Image (cartoon, rainbow, N blue to C red; front, side, top):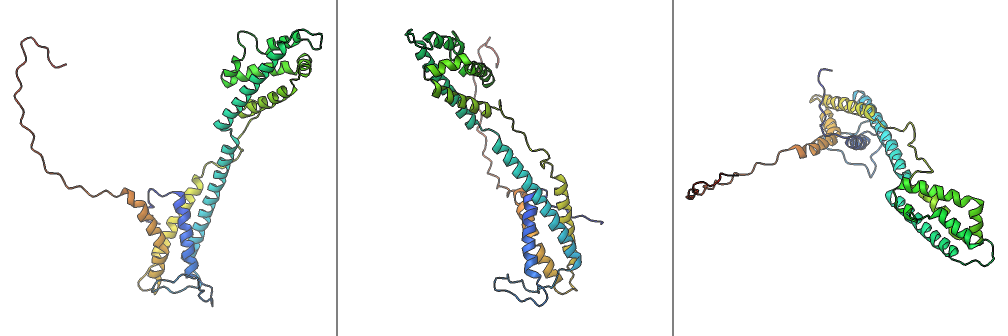
Length: 298
């Protein structure tokens, strides 16, 4: 091949896929099986172009190669878009993290209030003793830290909460929770803790699917090469001595011409503006001399 068509520099994959669909529709309009009659919904062909039983072989073969390459490119882009959408969907959003953090903070505040209330009771001979509630409060909210751990950075807050949740799992702490009616507080705290850990990735790990498509350069290169070959074959088919060949080439190439024209529009220079009439500069006014000893320009 001694010459190669230069495709528009701004051409993108969507243009190629759309062009494939436009040309496919035109081929379907011009190619009718032998003996097939024109249907009511069939597009009218331009003057000088008659229906064909099949495309000329030297157009049909490159068309099929281009169709296959564009279809492969489209399939790759679909798989890549789906994988990226799945990854974004699986990743926790900032809104989800904020909601999990707020829920966790609220549950710790409620638990602290319940524990403080139990610790404030006076000894009455009942079991467990309020001194046990005061022990638990000291384990969870020791002075001067108190509840400040829920205001720390997520990693620091998580470490502080894990240590406290382990204390709550112990038999002594569970006896306090059951004895003073804190089971509902504890259950909601456990749920909020799990939600926080999942939202910030402390308890679950979201990995991108291995082997997902990432590099579409081979498919893009193949589609471009197939398009160049097809355009050249269709263009070379036009010959004034072959009846209908020029009309067929113009009919099939019309979508490409339209696309190339659309892509060239932003690159066209805007019409030059008419130069405005020059305005004469004002005459400089007399400036009094600076006093002797005055400083120069800063």
